[in-house]
Length: 218
Image 1 (cartoon, rainbow, N blue to C red):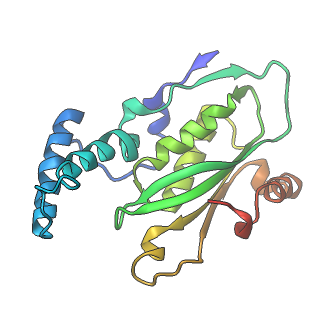
Image 2 (image 1 turned 180 degrees about the vertical axis):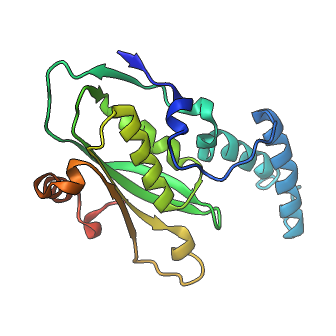
């Protein structure tokens, strides 16, 4: 069993635009609470109301501890890979991995599912780790194209194989609830490499296993 070094993996992944703030998580919460209080005051909301009084603090805690925890290198999931002693050489496919993120343009939800396949070479990854990797990259302000690439790149480097396929299906609140207000559309992004890109049989097996776009249940 081998532990993965998160920093080594993240150096090989398309970066999310970030700058170093030098703030602890507690300091971030204090600052966000103050700033969100100002936003609510600007909107004319009565922060003495018992329903609204704690909202700035709730939002700050949500941002730092929950929906944007994936901005922190230290929160990368603990991943142990095992040697493929049994020489398994067929596709491992996991479908319908919950993928809840937030659009970096409007900070509203992206609700989706991710489907992953890989063909092991020397290493095998525990199935739950696929879910944790997806969740880590989803928990940051995102665009779906980058999210799909980040998941794929992380898996290629963790598993040390190019035989990886990732498809993400998602609905975007920025499309559904504002602007065009299209409540029926969804977006599919994909990244296939190695055997899944070059071999029609492996590609067909994967694409025929995952739900069709209209069949995805969010």
